[in-house]
Image (cartoon, rainbow, N blue to C red; front, side, top):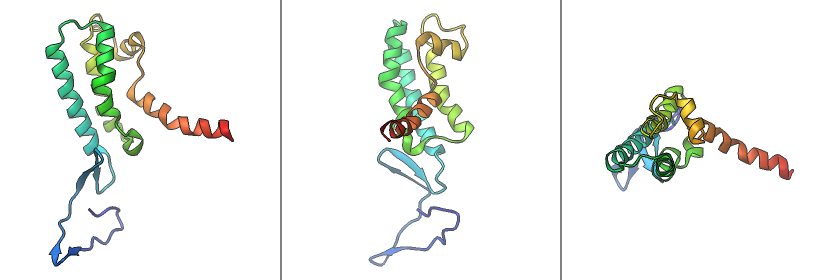
Length: 148
């Protein structure tokens, strides 16, 4: 993988065999692209969470608030937040793609159908994924100021 705009893109060989050039690679569960954008990982997390959401939607009959919030926190959110400090999305389209998971999931909960997304989050006592990322980013700075 050649990373960076100024990279000369050399051809590398190992024991006489030319190494193939790749554009994306999965390392420690995170998709990394040569342009260092997180779109591939956002799509991967969105697709994985969407599949789990559909499974929950099909199999859980009693979609009461406490049960669904618990399922969301344990089964879905970890996929869209896994190692987020390393790949945190910075493009609006990537953020909206991930936020769509939470938005769609809150719609299937009993008595949440007619409410706006923000109202559903308030009723469920959840934060948006972006608020959680921002809060996680601030934590080390707050501790540093508190210790120092």
